[in-house]
Length: 115
Image (cartoon, rainbow, N blue to C red; front, side, top):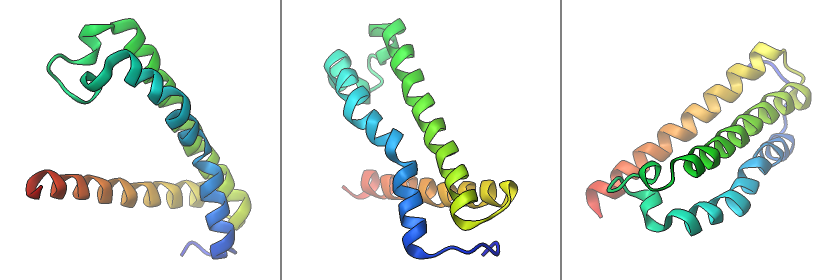
């Protein structure tokens, strides 16, 4: 779309490489969050920040840092793997993440409404 030299196999490899920090978050941070907050992690009554505010902020910041790390890996991987300029790479990644996020939000809304 942006004039790069992408193949499906390279794009799949770049995407799996970029999702490594998210997998690390799933394996290491989420179990700590679940052991600490239990099901209150997914509810607002009471919000987890009222149970243990410092630990909640620390774990949330770990999650944010790992998401940003994955975003940077995705941008750099797209730039190098597809031989794009930095701005085209940023546009590609933001477009891809926007499509995925909107699809997840729409799927979640559908699941909440009909199930």
